[in-house]
Length: 356
Image (cartoon, rainbow, N blue to C red; front, side, top):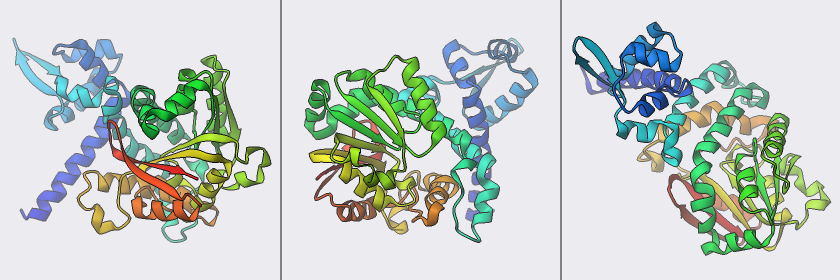
């Protein structure tokens, strides 16, 4: 076989593994095997998981051949185990190191948007947000995995050399743009009860869920606004209202990102701070060839971020818009002081700390 045919075979195998890994993660099979702390028979795994043994056997066959799960024979019985080192990356306990949660992304996007994305290749109008309802729940799950352990403990203390946390403890007004179902905002509101937090998103179902989550947690210092961030300048009550604004991987999804960034500047008080957290990438394709996850990230962008951004005659930035284009748009939006900073325990994102 040629080198390229070997590569294609590897792609087919790894693509199949991704699908099976995503199923195993969604069904919490990895968590159960990890928690057992011993090798399990097929029947034992079926019993603790409540799943059908025939399906489990086929799934385990993929995992064994893909070198994810280990198989041993003992006294004539097949025993299956998940190595701890694999659980450190595949299970929910992995927190910010959880790569298992991402295995669901491509299968999910394929199931809900493949036809629409292929049809839009010819016209370029964008895929309506309504085509991605299940993706919102996935993004909330992803936010839980990313923010649960590091947002309060690592990221916020790193902003402006710890000054932000002191301000949040004393009491300021903060906003999360593109807040989705409110995972990050509610975490911040719980951690800093003296501050006021406002989440802004243009998806009504996400806002409804964010409100329900805040109520369920008994949070009284968080509120949510259904608003297109590109039109916040029409809301006079928000002019120079916030001391701090953040946007977690949200700006690249916007149809009109320059207007969104200008709106964020409009909402900031003088000397206010804006944290734009986005994918650490370059703006030119050739400069991303060495990125360890470039094909995956470009595919997610093709299936979600870019089509969403093309709606309403939008720009369609895509996830891999890159730091150069980001700096250009931030400057054009009026942010005169911008620093690019690494994020603790997050090798894939970059923190653009902006001041007016």
